[in-house]
Length: 192
Image 1 (spheres, rainbow, N blue to C red):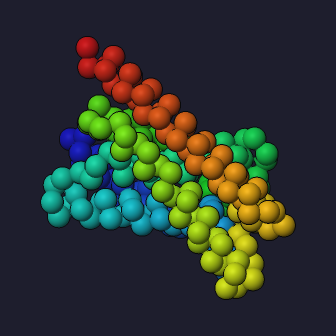
Image 2 (image 1 turned 45 degrees about the vertical axis):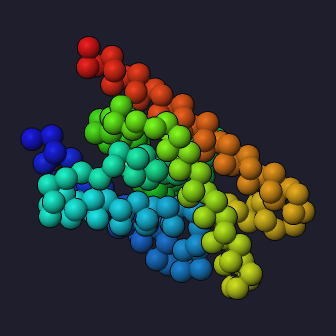
């Protein structure tokens, strides 16, 4: 029963993420390179793939995939609370509702006790690195560097850019490992 509920939640989350990011960004496609659009769209597509994968195979994808989707979206919530990003219209979903719903999904459905090699948690650093590369390519080809990477890439030295990227990667790793071990602790306690 839990797998069927999870599958329906996958479908709902996929649709929710795709609709809300399109709603938030459809008026000006020049902003579709922003972190919130890219991460939200990728998560929406992933959850639709997860739904169809379960329907066709009756198997769930690795917990690690869900974790790697949840963490970049959780960062959006943290930044919104820290610096007060826009929360009007669709952005209340993109910046507040979607991250909370996805975090709840991860807490309820994703048991990290299934991850046998804790070094695999380091894969959470892949998304921010890839996003930095994408933002750099967009900046050099289109002439517009997407937010929030524009705060780091534009008008900074190479040393400052690399230091900032390193700090972002460390933030993802620390948050990733902290949540991983907290999840394992909670699931171990619940299984006793």
